[in-house]
Length: 178
Image (cartoon, rainbow, N blue to C red; front, side, top):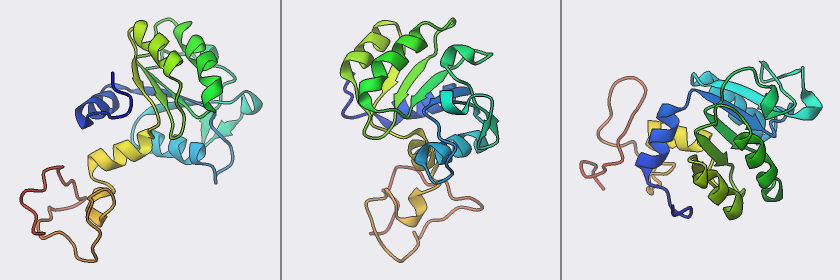
C-alpha cells in the first residue's frame, strides 16, 4: 500500500463500510480538533467512542468516554488515532488484542508510523495515515468542495452547474466552465 497517496475509492470504501469508530486521544476541550472530529463523525451517523484515560466515565461531545479500547463494550470497526506518532505502536497493539479485530487503523493528520502500519496490514486491517476522516468525509461527500475548498479553483463565482438542496458535486469537473 502506498501510504503517501490514497485513491478516493479506498477512502470512500472505508468511510462507507465502518459504523463504529473509537477515537483514541479524544479531548474534552471543545477547541481541540479531536473534539470536533468526534462530534462531527457522530453527527454523520457513526457510533463514536471517545478513548481518553483521563476522561474515562465522563462525556466528550456528549458521548461516554472510555479509558482504553478494551473497555468499549462492542466491536469497533475503525480506530482513529489522535496521538503522536511514537504512541501509535501501542495503540495498534491494543487494537490487535481486540476480538473481533477492527477493520481499519486510521492515523490523523501529521501522525504516521510505517512499522505499526505494516503490523496492522499483516493482520488484515486497512490503514490510513496522515489523513483526517472528518476532512475526507466532507471532501468526498461534497460538503466542502462546492465553495472552492479542494476544488483546486479559488473563485468568488459559484459553479454554473448546481443541484438542488445540499450540494453533492462529483470529482468529475469536465462539465464545469473554467
